[in-house]
Image (cartoon, rainbow, N blue to C red):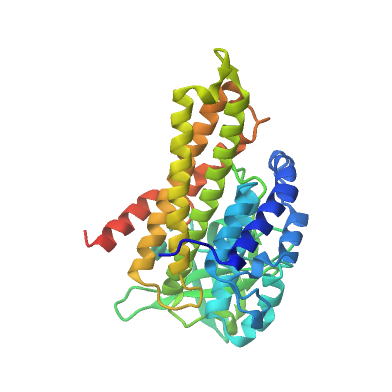
Length: 387
């Protein structure tokens, strides 16, 4: 088994690492303090082709693979998880469903700006009473005179309220199935559509440089042609989308874990106690060793999951679902432990916002919640084991 990256993947890693170090990291503190969205950084990521990495050249993409995208997300998140989630959500949740399930007309209308990073598209699945239980969707879309009329609400939606947000794809109940269950479809709603309201942004614990809002729909009417994929196929489509999203969140977690290790090691070599650098003390060495080990294990399973995932709308296998759940679960929890250890190694300074580890600690908790909580991942793993 060959674990080596291809020359193309190495080039993407090196380019993103340099960009993260030279552009993202110097701005991260100010973006975090002021809860500011980094429009200039997004523009530059677009210039680098990051928003089109896993998509075919025929739609303006870079023709790369999903692992290349995860490597890019990891490196960007090593500097700022808020910028990392902006990239992850824009590609995996925003553009990917259009690329995988959209009609030729939908792709031609929206993908050129999205894969270039000139516009962002959002993904609306979670609701006040339907997060982990996505099948409990309450938002309704009624077919009337060649249009879909939508009523409902979505929450915790990334990239929906920026100046360059072009729209959102939502899940909505469009009828009943033969088993009398809800028929869930995916519908595209462009920004500015009457009845589509982007509400005030959330006051978040972390990810301050990312954009997150609740949404509401009040008799919001869009053309019937805005249906994404087949009617009633929304649930299946978004399960596939979430599988890729989980792997990408795991890659983001690896980036934060690596940042925690970098910061903790550098500080431990400089900070002196009892006449020598604290890196010489076994208690600190054990923490650093655990951080290094868990970060590398997380990276390995994330890369394996990313290599196995297909970004072409194909039916996702149980093996890929298992790898996605395992990678998301392990990497998110490992990064949380890394952040805890990094703050502990910094001591009192780790509690101060002057040091990046305080931001890492705030940013990393949501990785255990978003795109399927740790509890949901364990349920999925057990189910796939046949338990």
